[in-house]
Length: 147
Image 1 (cartoon, one colour):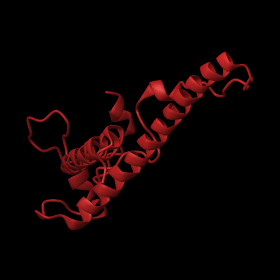
Image 2 (cartoon, helix red, strand yellow):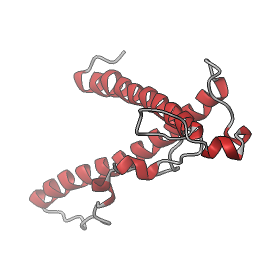
Image 3 (cartoon, helix red, strand yellow):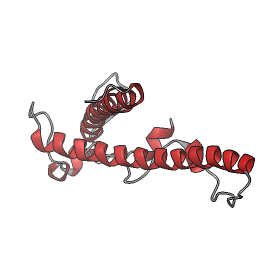
Image 4 (tube, helix red, strand yellow):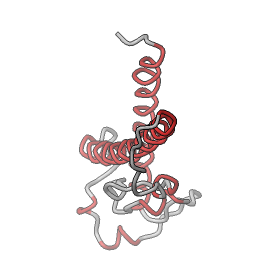
């Protein structure tokens, strides 16, 4: 899975800073065409530039949500509501490598299990934040129902 390349399995549930796994956004053209003053060319360039800059903004939004994911994961570990996680620096070498019995294919050690749980919880919170932004702010702006 492409998202697994971005993971930092260190018990904190974070992903690599300022990165994203969407390859289509990485393949954007590096520049834009020069502006001409003909009406038809202006229309074509306006559409092209609008799409181009919206794709650039998409990559910036993805990086923003990447940082938000890491912030959420950091605070989940600090709050530790159920007291089921501990600071990764407190893991002994034996705990980091000791295999635990599990039917889950995602983790084999206690450190990996903690990282997986924090990552998935932060991912869920981040996904719901994104859905809230799209449904309340973006869609409300399009429909003209923002207050």
